[in-house]
Amino acid sequence: MIKKYRDLSLQGKMTLVYAFASALILIVNATLLWSINSVLSRLEATYQDNLNLNELSQSLDDVQNSMTEYLNVKTTDALEKYYISDEVYRNKIYMLDDSVSSDVNLRMERNIRYMSIEYLDTVSQTIEAKRGRNVEKYRIRYENATELYTYISSYIDSLNSQMFVSNSENFVNLSKGLRTTESISLTVMIIVIITNIFAILRYATQITKPLQILAKSANEVANGNLDIPLTEPAYNDEVGVVTSAFNQMVKSIRNYIERIKESMDNERKHKERELMMETHLKDAQIKYLQAQINPHFLFNSLNAGAQLSMLEGADNTYDYIQNMSQFFRYNLKNADKIITLGEEVKQIDHYIYILNVRFSGEIHFEKDIDEKLLNAQMPSMILQPIVENCVNHGIREMEGKGVIKLKISKLLDTICISIKDNGKGMSQEKIDEILNGTYRDNGLSMDSNGIGMVNVINRLRLFLKTDDVISINSEGEDKGTEVLIYLPIDDEGEDYV
Image (cartoon, rainbow, N blue to C red; front, side, top):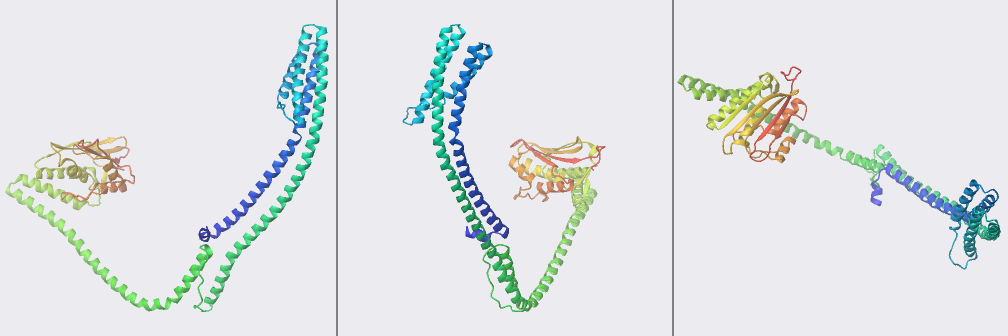
């Protein structure tokens, strides 16, 4: 806990002190409020028994009055009024204590309950006798009910008086307890306030003391005294950070002279490094020029071979060398350029021709192309690497006839390019790796041009400025793979926008 407190910022420490003081005050106030509410609740409950007895007495009077009213007027309203008062009084007497006890008040409650039950039965019989027009009978029962009413009223008044005396004593005791609680509350609040003041003063000292030491050290440095003792910060707050920075500044000044002496050697080494970098740069430029010369040399040599084969009448050899020449010409001319979809399709034709010469026509290439869409623009070297991937990873090692289908069609407001093979297929895991750019093909074929699917996808996304440009579908092992590329078209549906 101490280490965490040392690592807190000034704002954190202030928040912690404020939260501690607030929480302490809140707990104390909540405790005192609970105590006061408890005493007040007990005070309210002190005279609740008297209120209940008063309501019971009132309900008893309502029964007696409603009975008398019915006996006098014998109306339906008076009878209904009697039934209502009878039900109310019954509910109240059933709330009285029915247990056998040595307590005088509880015994009186029990007596009132049973006398009330007898009284209600007598009143009911009186009402029935009145309704049956038996005058003598209801007169006698009325007198009995009135007598019981008098006894019950007397009992209720007596019990009410006794409870009032007892409750008055409890009220006095609770009032004393309330005043005691008020005194304790005042004392506790004073203690809490003093504690908070002490905590705030201690916190303020922790902030100002390091600042005073830092100010004194800064004055010494300003006067040119760099041999002052450096005080390590006690806390990792803002003051501690400033103290650490000041100590680091003093150490830097002390080492300044030594660094000046070393600067000459560093400058000399820097110049040597610059000369070495210039040498490497010139070497890289020479190699770059060589890399440019070699493909042109190969292209010119192929042209010479094509002319020689034509002069000698070797037509197949001429066609093969001519396709090879066009294939390399496309790579040299259109590297990192924007070309048309038609040019990409021609490059695939050259590539398939070369492969079929090498592999005796084992690759069957089918095309279904909407010629109106071939003016769409796209980056170079997109389709050929995909076809190459179909050959090297899809159909080269399969048994039977390998087929590659190229379909270019319009789909809503896009050009859909489909390259599909009937080869080994591809797992969904591998498809996901290729699409999210995490796939790495460590077994690069010797026949590959070095441009992988990840490179193709990234260049398409950069060119079209969207990620939704390509999808790969495969139904499973030995069920082939289909690569779909989507290029937007303009309103006329012929040119790329």
